[in-house]
Structures are given as structure tokens and as C-alpha cells.
Image (cartoon, rainbow, N blue to C red; front, top):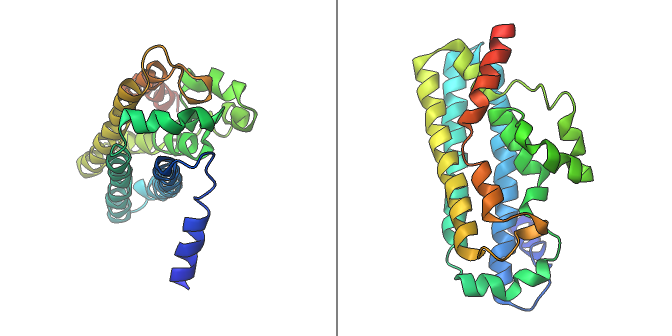
Length: 217
């Protein structure tokens, strides 16, 4: 059964727009990231529910979260086996498709960090993301907010490990944009490319807002 499921998964990653083998590498990297985005969100939500209930369970889920988040860096390492020239050989065929459109990615970030008001315009522009500007997403109590709220050194350290891993991934994504998309080339889906990615590497700008929400409670 597992072999059949894996074969089916492979078949579902073959809907390329070109005959270029390099596009397969790119698409499968994107699909793998989508799976990890979902997994990280699911675990982050589990961890959030257990932080104030059972510290041992929360520590377990945070450890699992770090392990799963690290997969993103492994996927990116594989993606960078493509040279900029190989990437550009099929990029035009991707049309209006964009990683920015991934609802799994944005839901993952909301689960881990909370709503990011810097993305309001992005969500408004894409119809399937528009609902992320509304409750309960805008007011979601993130994993980071809950962990910082209990002030438990063990859990804070465990979350810091998760954050380092995700920060590395965001930095690599930005670096990929700088290397693979020259300044005169727009990012996928019409975004500004590396400039867009750079704005969201730092998540600490959200802390003041989270602290204000905590104080208001």
C-alpha cells in the first residue's frame, strides 16, 4: 500500500509546463515544502494547546516541530542543485504561479508567529487568501505568544531552536531570490522577487504587537 501511495504521489508531481527535467526538481521541491508547511502548522497547534497544560507534552511537540521544520532546509539544499541558468530555463512557463499564493505557508506562519499585518495587502490581492485578514486568523494566539507568555526557560529554549531553523530557511529563500532572480526580473506571480522576501525574513518586528496583546489580557 505504501509503495502504491508513493507512486501516486510521484505521478501527481509530473504536471509540468515544459519538457525540461529541471522543472520536475522545482515542482517536487515545492510540493514537498507544501507537505512540511502543513505538518509544521499541525504540530505548532498541538504544541500551543499543551504549553499551559502539560510542560512535558509541550516540550515533546516543540522538539517534533524543530525536526519537521528542519526538513525545509533539506529541501532547499536539494533545490539549490539547480543552477540559476537551469532555473531560468523553465521559469517563464510558470506564468502567474507564485509561492506567495501558498495558503499552507501563510497558515503555518500564523500558527507559529501570529498574524503579520505587513501581509494585509498581499492577502487582499489574492482571493483565496483574503479570509486570512479576518478573525479568527487575525487574532490567532500563536505558538510564540503562548510560549513567551508562560516564561518557562525550557520551552523558551525549545522554541528558540525552532525559530533558528525557520529563520535559516527564510534567509535561504531570500538568498535564492537574490541569486536566481536578477534585479530586473520580477518574482513569481508578479511580486518584486528578492525584495519581497527580504521584508519578511525578520519576525521580531511582530513581538511588540504580541506583547501589547498579552498586556491587554
